[in-house]
Image (cartoon, rainbow, N blue to C red; front, side, top):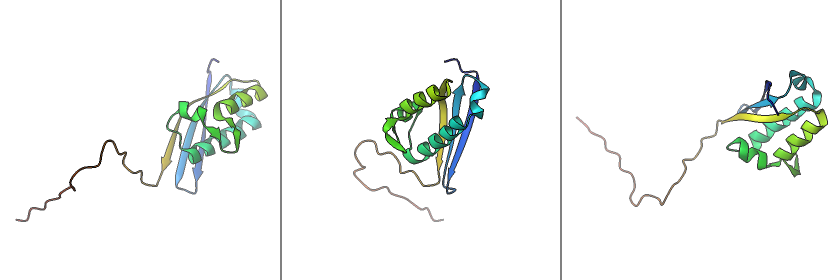
Length: 119
């Protein structure tokens, strides 16, 4: 598929999670099709809920609205339905919930020490 156009869809969940997804399209006609627009909204909502780390992980995930199909299979199905090539080129997900630090290796053997110097 030769990408000639780009399309961006957004989704915000209760003001706490935000998603932007960029799609690659063969033509600008695709962006006007109801089936395509509905699909992009569903995919943005899926990203908000499933928290994929990258496009490759996203494509392998089971679709939250129909777990019998992966996101990659869903994209293929929608592409066939509308007779246009579609790809997910990138996405970004924001969350207002704090992300716990990644733990690498064993925990420290002693507690952290904070010092306060008083003059």
